[in-house]
Length: 423
Image 1 (cartoon, rainbow, N blue to C red):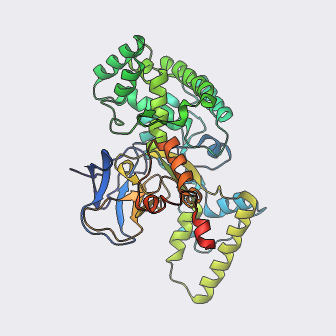
Image 2: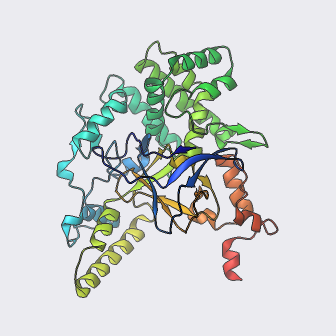
Image 3: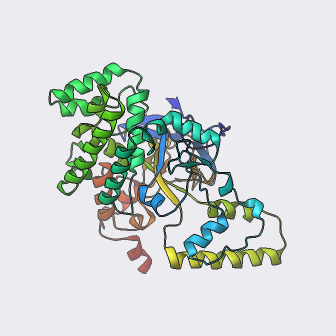
């Protein structure tokens, strides 16, 4: 049984200490795969894990709509006042008390040395991004025209709301090609692809890479097929794949890994891996300011004035922009990805550091050795009936849920939580 670690790639500025995790990765017979369990008894509100991602990236459309985030750790780079003004469509910046609670300072952002559109919160993040992926994926680099062509094709194929990012897919391929522990495995996978052995190649393509332990199957026994296999997706998905193949063949000429990773089966495995394991990331200068100013010592009158101001700004944002308030993206996390789903979860994750650093928090007391579960579904889907939830989980995650809530609803599979409330 391996103890969970907090090792990382992207997700923060210079290396920072993190609290020891209160969970560990194990295998449970019920799932037949990885699971996360507590080391000791934990209480509601306890932070179980702080983890940075192996890879994370902002959504393409989110970035195009002027949600400015660090190109490495995804920290929101707007000021809270600036973000309020943009999202609430205000003609002037609101005056927020205690400006020291605002983390971002746009004047201090660090641009890409090649002059592309990427910006960073620190020189550390810029250097880390360059080493990790940006030296290959910079739009002002040697293959910049292909990079830009791919990004525009992705936005045409996948309008908002997005479920993953073309930038994340490219970063994953870059890491698989450049960071694999055993190039021989990828050579074997390429040979499988040339021989038409798509199934074997899909099994091998992540071996020896940072993504080896993630679920990446696109089809499982029992009739489970990932939505990337749908006919409506296949043509567009293959167009994106061929553009990526052109880009990475140019970036890594003569590579035996590229044709394996970007074969039809290999690319579908990447999409399935992100879809089945990825965590949605949301960062916000407003949320960071709100969290800090909430604990500032002030008089009751000043607190009331602040609450009134913020509530008015939130209402204006909701009316002008709706629910899309954050810098949004997705990431892959080595330990958090071991969390299995429950329709009645005992934990949830969030991003209080205004970066892709993930905090897993207990939402109820959990006994020592018990499994830690989260919801893979959004709050709206979670309130739907058992049949709806099972359809969503089967299509995106390839399993049928047997959590306590689903077992309790086995005799009323079409009854939603809203129906229960009406009763």
